[in-house]
Image (cartoon, rainbow, N blue to C red; front, side):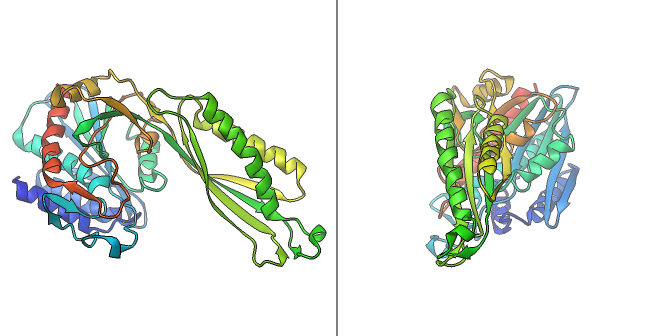
Length: 379
């Protein structure tokens, strides 16, 4: 496959508007491309236009199983008038391809697919098995990775390479978890001239905020990860009330936590549940807590065979942690512990931004890098 074909395939990817949906169209494109080169694949349906794609390529002899993974969804483009070029046109200018999802992370996912194809076409020897896990719904809820994990697709893995953007600058062996939550406050409406006749739902939320903020501040102060730093907590959305002269009967807030293994998701859940229970014993109304996202922190050894294989290919790059979460949060819950690496084309500061781009030559280079890492790991 020549360079122009590889570029055209990525442009096709960017032009598929898989904004938190429609990943089945991406999966079908990859399925047809793999089939054209003699590689069978499986569409794992979820609902609507959302699907995962799984493909396998076996080596010469039995050996380790290496999963190569990337997500097929992208976030919304935002105000498209602020873009230099339309966000789904995949325009190339000065060696950069602009578009939503170029860096996060269709360049990485496409490079993995093309690496798999070129390994088959070249006949380069390796042992074991390459397993492609292309997922839907990573941006909101890591839904695809969760489905594949629950169905057992990650139970046989010895290694997992996720092509999230790192550029050829660092190797990533850890990332924070992500917990999103919602607290709904239920009160009783009344005229604001007679507040004693009602139950103020907003004031009940204020009680929650006055308790959870110092409790989380204590967690943040006491626990730290060498690679990932400290837990973060932010209340990010709040709503309530219907008009200024009525006591609000309902209100809600939402927040997000970036967790570390030193004070993990289960401990955070317990902390929140205990505070909600304590408040509900004191108030006349009621608070209801729901965890809307539960992505686990991942912190894997820096001396794993997969990272050592990558170092042999790209040199002794620094090994770092990532504040964002990835599909690794779900795959790491599989029955078997595996080697873990995040490494892929793209500038790690660009995801979700206006005028997102990927350097075309870097994307092309990573197709070869991925082949070399795979062969080295499965030698």
